[in-house]
Length: 373
Ligand code: PHE
Image (tube, rainbow, N blue to C red; front, side, top):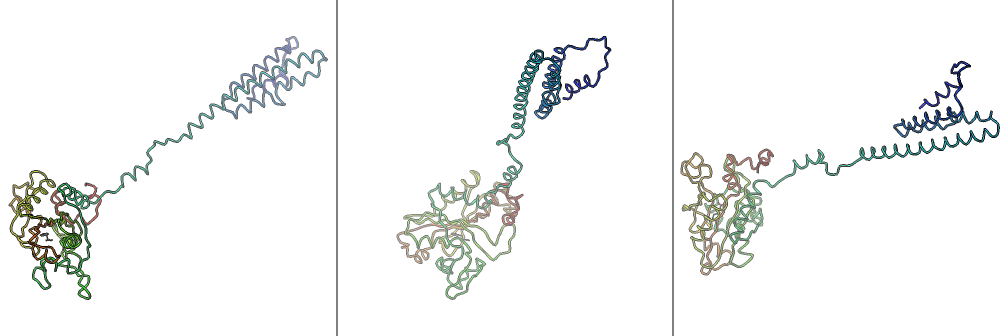
């Protein structure tokens, strides 16, 4: 950048030349000034550098300006001619500077745009993190929905009832009078004793049967999923807070065969075609006759193992034909209507289907377990 300037100075500050040597002519001198200036302009690689070159080659102390000052020594004619030459040089150099400035400016703008570019398709680290931590339904809820789907496909509707029930709904209407020994089938959490009513955390979903039959006249084809409570010490196969799916069908001419067929259809659709059901005589105060539902052991697929005590069958549900006493409690004529009911554990279904050794993992909320489903 100082090249042109420096050259000029080295000349005027006394480049030693012998007198005999030809001093370069004025036009040669001007041509050299222009050439050096043009080179310096071309060599500038940034706008800032170009600004410095501009001062050096066109500014007050440039070789060009000095040459202009030297014109004073000439006579008028020569001064006019030489002045025009210098003016033309200045004009050409100014054009060069302007062109170079535009070139560098464009390149610098392009570089800046490239640097500031926002890649809107980029996946940031926080997005990856939030994708990983996105939640899902708990296995029990997933299981409940799948079970609902199986029954809805068979023509059932889905109904729900309260978790805190009066003694009437949880026991009495289900043909379990006060002090009846059948109450000891369920270890109950009592919320209120008497006055005005005894209120319990429901021990099963069967009270929802009563609500349904009270609320709308038959026919009824419904499943009733929900949370239940029993005063139990949790172990590998029992939880104090668990889930049941109740079923109730009330219609004309419903028989035990309808019950058995419904249970078998549900079993094969939910657990798979190689898992079947069988009914063993049982007892429940609200069904008569009553049965225990057993299904093929999902661990040994019926071959016999430790879990099923070598029988190939495990207990899953209770069921039976609706007891006439229950119909009477809700004002349905047992001579006109018949029906069946069943109830099974949703958590137990999840345990069997996914072969979960200890049911307690369902309540521990350990994501390492839950995210497998
Ligand atoms: N409510 C019963 C229980 O929890 C199961 C059941 C429901 C039995 C419906 C018969 C009919 O053990």
